[in-house]
Image (cartoon, rainbow, N blue to C red):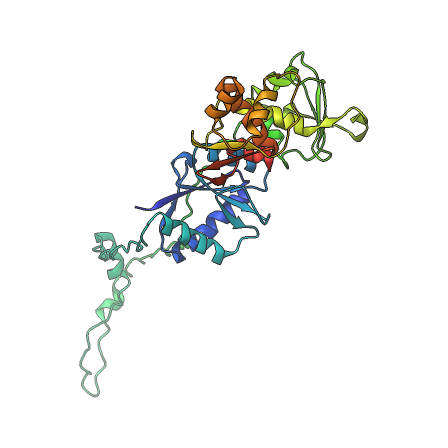
Length: 363
């Protein structure tokens, strides 16, 4: 049974080029893959990490437990595997072969269809064949010498009707079969997705309802908004489309009133798990602060949680018991500091990357 490969998070020309390259790479690596129209059914998914929606597609697929192949010109990527841009056909073939070997997929021989027998000619075809055969008269013996040969009787017969044979229609050249791969629907981004490095190309403003205006400058890694963070919690609840963000001119940025964008990233991580560690780490994972974070006055319990986490690696339950706070508060605090890089995670003594949106925010 062939492994399934999907593609998403890319424009049409990029997907068409990758699709064409896939057929050659798949054939040279044992023909062990087939393209899948639905990403949720694919064993592996190629994501264009250099596109606007690529990182968002990666986070969605990563959280769903898919093996993501990052197509990027960057030397490193957060995805499970990397496919370098510009595309190298040999590297693509080697990557498919390695992934297939890891899954134990065996090479698949191309199906060879037996030749079909030529169809029997139809009556109409027989008529045409007979019509194009030359009318050859039988050989006659030469007349005796000194006699005048009698006129041939057939010379006085009316001419036979002409037979018109239509010219054959030109045969169109066979076109290569290309799988009709339907890209996945674009992931509905939240404000957290727009805080991922590279998602925004310039300063923007965002406002929801009667809430305060929030201005984000991705290049300077700053934002302008209310002093506290809790007035912005509702901004992370629902989807935020690109047209919801208003581009700012250079003169719209108010110098001297900006705050570090890290605070917004911290809030995005705090709200990401809803009281649980973001999917991707087991319950027995251990967490530890590598340096003292800036604790917010709006969250007084965080000081006790930070004190407990500075003592050494511990599980969420162990930290909650040491700090005398609910485990849900610990999980949210851990998520926030994994997103900002102030905390690390380990599983059975081995460092583990920040999962999902936390790793994307952390970069």
